[in-house]
Image (cartoon, rainbow over all chains, first blue to last red; front, side):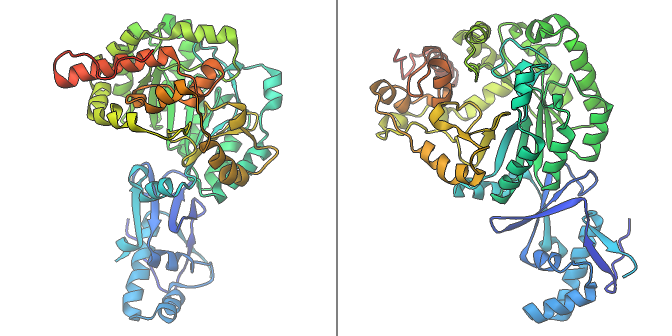
Length: 103
Length: 385
């Protein structure tokens, strides 16, 4: 299935996953079946992943998140945009994020 | 780039696990949600009748369990084993399970599978457990029910198991190796291994009951295999023997005889995990029932138990000469079922050797030495009894 990510869209964590921070590790635990590709998995987010995840607040579009991250961390907006889009695609594919309609 | 932002790992490869172990953080916990069971197995260390009203009254309520789960999650727990008794006997099983799921906990369930129905299947399909461990007592009605002592239980077990397997629920297997089923053990192993991608394990080491019921303890003892029988079944099973052989140097370690300290516990009890009984007793491990080692979770917080009580128990010591000269410095302690918890269940004292355990350990040592060197020789550490 093709996943199309738009920078103007708002995405939020799915209700079918729980995000937890344990001893400095940020992990995502699926609650229902069909999340992720394999059995017996938990998912870990890198620092970058966590920074994006924390900003998925039902208000900000991906464009807003790219702006935020550029301000907070510096670096090239193009590189950050690539990270944000890639991360969103990856998590949408795993059904860990959902698009918020009508924002 | 996205790959660097998110990674999927199997739990066994999860580095946090190792990190938590070394930090002595909480990783997992066992919830014995009931002591009641619809079977009445001869070897069981906990089971009470399914209609035991007193036991039912003493069971932690759903709210009490939720409170424990909340505290465990705040301490960082990631994994919970729901066990019993037979956990499916609890009417609020789904509520307990769902609550754990909502909190981001991975779940294992121990069950005899006899109560599994379509409702369980639909539920587990939607909210998958990490695994369901089913105990297989026998493959014939005669054998199974001579152990379970419950008419109809074999058919119920087969029906429940088939439902799980047919619907792709992740099942792993275990069996207790008993006098009553030892003749079927090879068949049981074959049956189980053909039906799971996960592991099958058999356990010939029976410890005594938590409630110290003397009559039931005699039944357990009567199901224990002799040391030679245990060695025989371990040798006959290539997978089991392979593991023993691979770990031979850890299982027989002459350096242990140099130990000078008098700590009672040298196992992993209380390192990363705890158990709560159906009536709210916190322990460092399921078998550790000595009055100085249990904490009433209804009267104190889990944090208090974890942060203050556990280190205190782990620091317990003994100066009993028998303990210091035998178990504490025994080079084959890792081949032995002996531990302070099992010693207490056996004879009311945590620092007393248990002859049967000692005999089994030495028989296993003799077998390993003989098999790994390819020739028979006297065991290096002859029985001290």
